[in-house]
Image (cartoon, rainbow, N blue to C red; front, side, top):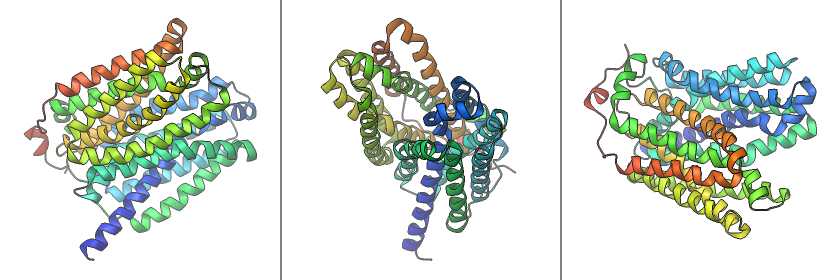
Length: 397
């Protein structure tokens, strides 16, 4: 096969990886739009259905590192197909679940695959792309953005018209088709580097990696302290009509797609500077929002701008982690995934604790504080590479 044909084949595989992220993210968030319908059908509280999302994130945090380490020797294509199969099975069981307990079990199954999937997907895309690792990561994360912009709303619409079980069944069907396409298109790739549990001390000993993970926790907390409660902020503080929220969030998602594309190119040039640029952008948006949230026109403009660093954040942070991961990309990514999900849950929990005291209007300032800490951490981090112990680590035997 010529080099040009091989590049085309590899980018076709990267597109399928992006489709996989779409499936996983849509599956994770699917109950959000169908809380009431699922609650009525299963005869449980709305809070119990909400737990399906919270528990999912918690299992991702707990399982990402050990499960990624345990699967470190598996060929990458085989592992990817196994994870897709687990996701499809979880969605199918959810569609047929006769009780809440069975549905919760299906969600646990999907979450176990989710953590490992996000731990390997960026490194896999980078290997396929070669020199364009940042752009490959951006392409893969586009599936994440599309899931939020189109996947979850479409699943919600299907669920409202044909029942929530139909949404899970449709997701299982799409996942099964994706499994077949992945089996045909994605090339065989052996496990690479040292990613088992014995690699973790060396991974965590890397100062640049620790800084990248710390920045991840701070920026994701900044984002989700505010974004989780964007609806009450826009309604109660800005005074916007509830009917405007969905179109505004769609604009946020569209600018996020643009942010993905920009982030990939920035990260390929210099991932450290790209992280600092995103932290600065997040700080600027949230700090400004904390001052002008009562002004509708300015707030709407800021919401559109916010989509840029919000989406770019995942791309540049993941690329930075891979840049300083040395010979343990999957182990480093597993730590990143765990901290990222802790940031999501921690930000949402922090916001919930603050709202009774500050109202939604007080959240952007708190988010800006975390973004400022992330920027300070980034600016104080040297451009040093991963330590020799990481780079020279032996592959698993």
